[in-house]
Length: 265
Image 1: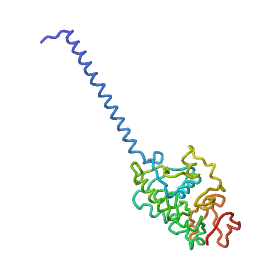
Image 2: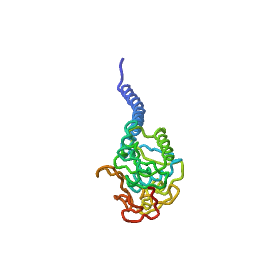
Image 3: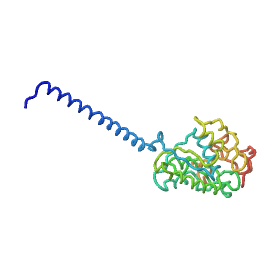
Image 4: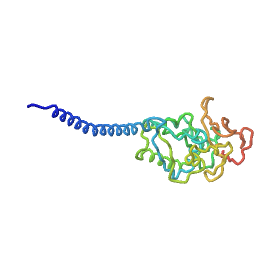
């Protein structure tokens, strides 16, 4: 068969046009696949670092006072930090309760003198630990505050539900705390409803309504001291009394009368 130059030229032009027509959809397909892979990659990376945490929402119904104490620590003692890492395995936080001093039951009536602690009222005998024992940041150096056993039971349910919620943090993942399900108190509102957080409420003598009365919350935040022999005691970890311990001789605080604060010996 004989082809003229004109025929060959037309054939080449047709071939080029056909190839170009096929190439465009292929490029679009590759671009789409790359975009999907980027999305999957971002999804995989969420929670793998403190800078890219997963969102974690916790219903605070029934433990509003504890949530407010948690927010005080996050806002006033940790500079507005809401991002923490869940422990690697189930029961991974059990040792944290010992390391923080929570297992010493520092707010029980028979431990107030020994541990040098005080509490809001006779019902706030259970130690609330923050950062939570279920986080990698819990344990040594965690802050303890007196709470009721009833609210702590509600809190346990709320935290567990937040972890199990679809999209919630798995073991070892970083997550950002958001509280919902009940009106936010002063510290939670300042922390979660302002960007940046409003630390103007963090004064040493700032008062708030908590556990049914008005208190200076900073005076009830403690850390265990383990480097001065046993029995271990706790010192104030916030406010104007930070770093000092309560006197056990009387209802005085290291020689100064405690105004508006009741101790239960």
